Image (cartoon, rainbow, N blue to C red; front, side, top):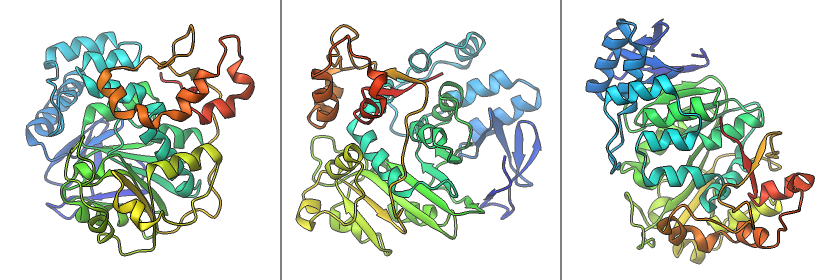
Length: 375
């Protein structure tokens, strides 16, 4: 792991160091390091068993064990270790197949469709306001790392953190993520610092975390110079999908002491589609009634960072190959997101199957007709 990032143990106060190809330690506790993913989540039953297996050179078994670890919100049951070991030896060829095997359920629909979802597009707009090639880009609760992949495609070095090992493993193996990946609960007391300025993103996740002030303080402490973007944070106005621990606009704003800009998803989506820089917050009345909020605290870019399409793109798999009509992954997904999908639906409705999308790939990339490929 790069020496530019430092992780101190809350138990010993010492910085973790690497003692073998697959192990780190703080002098007392040892931590698994598999596929260049450091597992420091405070789950001794998984951590200690994985360490024991790694010491016996049973890397496949240790990987399978950690792939079973889940977060508190999961409603699915992962396959057993023996079954996962068989899966690892065969290695499914697609991300969708891998998620299906790991029994991701509706979460697989979310990740498969996420490349073009309204909450993803709003996150892209946030990224354009904070990314900088001279900064490390850190994403907290990064999932399988789709935003990280886009940052890396644009030559920005990344660090991804998530509480679920399997999501990071999917990002490494099926998105081809190159950056540092850490499996950790951001609420835990590990001190994580980075020796250069940081842009940090937490998208569609903070409302799931109960101790928000503690989490935000930790994100700010990653570097002496950290710009923080928090996106699609559910408020107490979101009554149809009341997940996690949402707050009111006033309660969220009370957590922020630095200069900040407050915006809605709709404002961010417009900014992404039209290459606009957001100069000021939405009107307080709009924010007070919003079902989800986003904000940027700290110094934003003077001009938006251009997220350019990679060479390898594919037609959005949500679109039928015969007529470009949207084929929703599920009725529940359609119900939740369809009202905010105008950029994709309107553009797709005007397409002819004879059109060469790659002749104007910037336009179709913006509208998410063309999206990133996966391994």
